[in-house]
Figure (cartoon, rainbow, N blue to C red):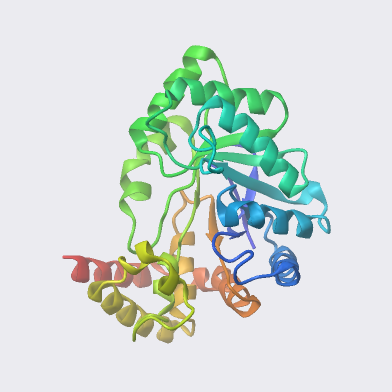
Length: 316
């Protein structure tokens, strides 16, 4: 396992990390969570990602229980604030919710602070300057070390930086966008000025496109699978994408790896990516995905060119 700086910042994150989205509390009970997190840690993973919205807080409680077995200074923990409940001020990035939601998350996680605190989505109902000030308060109180954004546009992030300069407060250090073989423009094009101007890092999610890039949906949606329960993910399963996966499987076969490992390794080849957040519904999936660090070494310029040709041909 290699470790990468989070953009220009000093924090080092394992190139592969482990997130709890969807699986904690649904596919994984506390024993399975402990086993998966321990396996990831033993393979060098030091970053674990969560959010207040995951399982309506259950995900944070499960991770917090498992974290009791880990030395706090050896792991980096993140959570994200936006969808916190049904109260009138429990959604969005207003200062009240950011401060109270973060404290609730910390109680569930059993932590005094998180290393990374994300604004889970942009909030059109709250001025960015209010959000920026609240995040700085949380950092000054020692409840988080770094803060970042998730799925914000480059323009919104630029506005946040402008307010940070004007108010002389800590700026966002990292963005958490979706990035995979099917979703590339934001990371590869839109955010380029942010990397260069502010040195922002990127902790990317959905590297397997909701599981589509594992090939398990090539012949339909299996009962009990993620796409069966997630309508928005089902809408991303198109004939064109299935054909891309089938062609990528041939390349993966020649390399002696799975198409999922190939997709993860492809994300790792991007030097702008600080860490690739994996998910897993069972231990065997996690163990397979962890081998992507070895597959990365096989992705020569020629292999990367072949992958790009497959994508361009099917998308063109």
